[in-house]
Length: 289
Image (cartoon, rainbow, N blue to C red; front, side, top):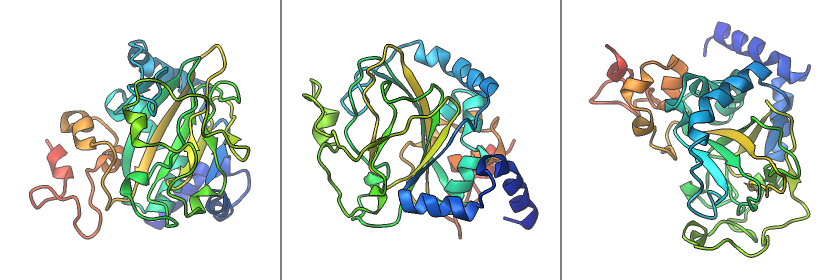
């Protein structure tokens, strides 16, 4: 990244840093494993996102198992659904943390909307980079972002986190996700993952929470009478495999219309020295007319 680009990035995120340096915010991120910036998106931006998601949420397709949530709507491959949704993945504040943690060659690992309907139960505890199956404690191999489209509250299923748990050595805790959660026919009895040290990430609409890939967290129970909608783009290092197959989720004909930085995040980019080439050439050649 050249000096001019770095300066422009600093200017772009300055309004949300509240006079603190990026280094200070990153120290907090390293200590706690998560960080929240309130009301990053404007009301107009939130309305555009709602409009883009409306046809997909209107289908009311609910989760297939305990992990997805049987009373939740999940919309995957958002970068292919609308330019409005695609551009959210390159928001300068989110990317500033993702690139600092994972490198400029980082990729978009997953991007989905999660809409918790009233009556949804608490999700099993998990950490988002667990699929790499590297023993803990270790460095994080991901950054997850949580954009609050609705206000998230104690009652409507705000994401619950365990502060500092990104540093824990445990690969399993009480109430953690298990293989049976993907095949269980009936919901679990009660809440086996209830913990007194859990923090609910209550935040107004438009807020952004970032979490390290090793942070234990879960979706909360929605005990309100209204749905709770968030969008979660998740990032990984350029040398790891993405959770969602972005080259199929967002095929070349769709990727051509997206901003260059989004194309790079999808995988039309190179991780030094030449990881990600296509037929011996830079993958951007695939998008060229």
